[in-house]
Image (cartoon, rainbow, N blue to C red):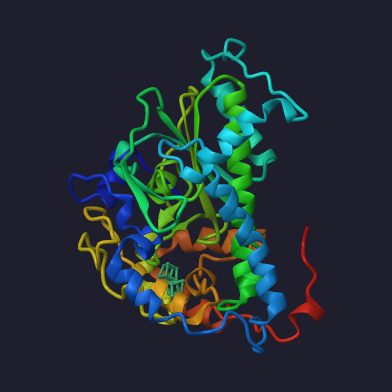
Length: 402
Ligand code: SF4
Ligand code: SF4
C-alpha cells in the first residue's frame, strides 16, 4: 500500500476544475424534487413490501426497518447542519422551550481548557474517542471546499414542497473527520433480502449515533462541529479518500483496505486543530479495471463495464471527477419496483472480506503482485466468495455476533 501526496491523488482522480455539486441533483433528492423522476418512481410502486419468500417475510422486513426508521429519524433531526430541516428546527425550539424540564444540564466549555498548540495530542484523542463511540475507521483531511454541496434541499413540514438554498460553511471550519462503520459481513451476504438490508441499516444506525456523539463531544469542549451524517452537506467519498480511508471502486463506493466497500461513511467538519492523514493507493483502480464483477452481478445494469471517464450517465453524476459513473436512476428504480434492498455490489466485491489475518495476508499479495489481478478475480469466483447466502432457515441458524 502506497501513501500518496495530495497532488498525486489529484492527478489520479480529478480531470479538471471541479464545480461544486448541487444536492438537488443527487438521487435522494431527485426522487421528490425532480418531477420526471418522481413520476417514473410512482409508476413502479405496485409490489408489496413483504411476501412468503425467505428473507422477504414480515419478520425480516421488521428486522430491517427498525434500524432504518431510527437512523433516518436521527439524521432528519440533525440540527447542526448549515441548512437544517424545518422539522429539526421545530424540535430544537420545542426542546429549548422545555429546557428546564430536562433532567440534565450540560456545561459547554469555551475551549480554553484544550491545548490547541498540540494538534498531535488532540488528533490522538479524537481518533480514540471516535473509536470508543463505535467508529471502525477514522481519518482526517483538510476540508476541500470542492466536495461541499453548493446548495442543499430539505423537505418542508407539509411534505409537498422543499427548500433549495445555498450552503455556506463558515471559514473557521478547516478540517473533515471521516468516520467509517462496518456492516456485519455474514448478514450482508443475504443480498436482495431484508436480512442484508438490516446489516446495512444497523451500521447506518451506529453511524448516525457515533457521528452525533463525536460532534457533541467536540462542541462540549468549546469547538465547532457540523455533523454531516447522511451525505447531505458534503460528498463523503472524496473526503474519505483524501483522509486516507481507501480508494474509489467501480461501483462508486469507497473501498477500504480493512472492510472493502462494506463501510458506511459520515463526516464531521470542525475548527479543532488536527493533524491530517494521507491518501492511499493499494491498487483498487487497476483491480477494478480487470474485475468488473459488480457490473456483471448488478440486477439493474447500473454499473459501468467501461473505463473510467468524466462523462456523466445522467445529472446525478458529478462531472470532472475521473470515475466509473454509476446509474443511480436505474438503481433506485429497481429498489422502488422490488421494494427489498439490494447491496449486491457491496457483497460480491472481492475486496469485501472479513478483516482477518488470512484475508489481510491475501490482500498484501494482491497489492504486491498486480500482474495477477485477473487470476485473483477468477479465484474469488472459484471459491464462491461473491455468492449470495440463501435466506432459508435464517432465523433457526442465526447466531448474531455482539
Ligand atoms: S445496489 Fe444493486 S442495483 Fe444498485 S448498483 Fe448496487 S448492485 Fe446495482
Ligand atoms: S466488484 Fe470488482 S470491479 Fe467492482 S468494485 Fe469490487 S473490485 Fe472493483
